[in-house]
Length: 437
Image (cartoon, rainbow, N blue to C red; front, side, top):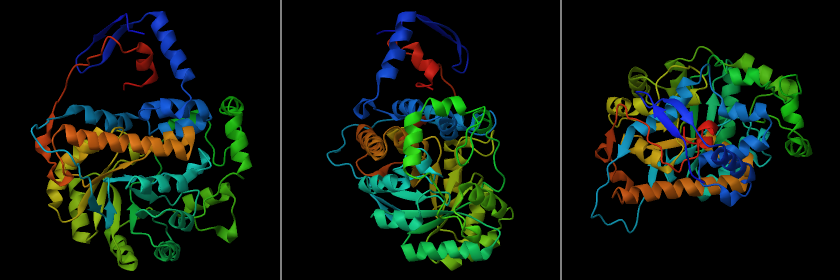
């Protein structure tokens, strides 16, 4: 199967015209439809295509979607294309060492699973499966306040490093109660998310009729009817709840919990509150959601252990910069006074290497493991993480860096702009599906 048409590009790499043979496009679409075996998935986009076929539309687009025009979400991924790796040769790469200590956690692969809410909505294996596979790969796991597994269940079911992601509530008693549970369960650190004081405008959720808990409406009924396997599995496991959210009057109703939690979200997060919380916690304390050099310097003054440079996967403020473009300046500004981790746009192991070369201590991945979980449950997460870890290790070997601490910016070159080059063997169906975007 080969591409037999032609493509014209405009400045900046935009595609102006496409002509493709129907046979090539049809063959590509047939291959995608037939790809149902786990071993047929070789990258993040493969898992995403399977997830799209298996999830009701509103749930798939909840994972995939972002705020407003989704410019920032796309920029997060595309930013990695502007950096190219410069290999060094004649190096001893018989053993590649990726070990690193980050946020008080000993990692064999400097990656954390990002905190993502309601994972059991996509597959009943949920958060516990992701935490187990992260531990098996030597990565860390961050559990969301909005998780569908309790922080105690995740702690008991996984031996790897674990960090709890906290949303600040407007009731300090509730905040301390959650922190006390984290202390008792043995979490390594707490990560306070600060970029969600107001919810982003996620138009896909509105367009595709997302509700929590899932309810049929005119926008989503067809997509749910077309996915009976998801519905049977969801009902067989009793639906979902939010066991880490403080409950009003002991209620376990998901609708009640989400409404109550939204009312309790603190919109006045100050550095004074941060200092109080980290003092009460007494272990590594991290701020997630900073994007400016000024805020990073304030974090140094506040004495936090580290920051996660993040735009929430583009799900909050659309039009903010790609995270990768912010990392170098922030790393230089804090001058090793705290640890800086990148969250946003990671889709490949070589993306991890590029982020680390710019100075990030580690990276977070979110959507990739949600695609894999949605598609195949725990076995899917296992394969996706194995692929990405091998890519990271292989990339380090290919650029001649046997130890991750030897990686620096000399391994990169930056391209402000470049044309798009497409192999003659790339089917245009892949362009339409987003597989090469």
